[in-house]
Length: 216
Image 1: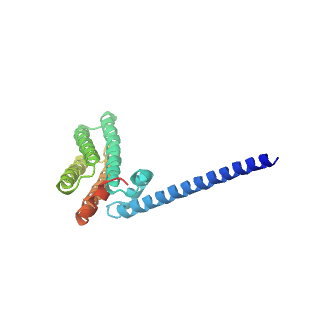
Image 2: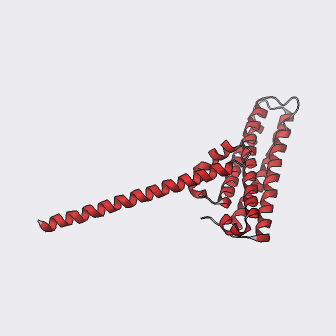
């Protein structure tokens, strides 16, 4: 009877220890997630569309944690995903019933612009992914490439929108494409701002370069 009571006590203690460990782990994860969200919100203040920035990046807080590079790379990945969706959407607009020859020409030009956008954003994501713990001139070279490609992607998106300007371009096709591409342009603008912030932070604190590019 005494042995049985002792065994039950041991089991109970083990169970309590497991509960304490689980509660600690949950608390730690919650705190880490909260810190990551605070980091995202603070970083997004540097963007043109901060509310959109927070909304689009918050779902990836556990991946981003408090890494400047991961934040920038995730922002670029979000932009790339939206660009692919927009590109598919624009391609379908050539089959819209009643589309005018002028609208069709603008749509075809936009398809090319979105293809270029996707290519440049893909290059940017790969570049940040391959830079590792680069510092000094290597860091500057990698980031410069990313800034150039993302800026070009933003130009491509705006060029697509410019193609629907002027008279005779006020219908459903223009409105639908504009809504889709503007969404991409906004997240691309935010991604560029975050990349620029990443580069600026590195420039101001070169001794912390390894921390900035290394995922914690």
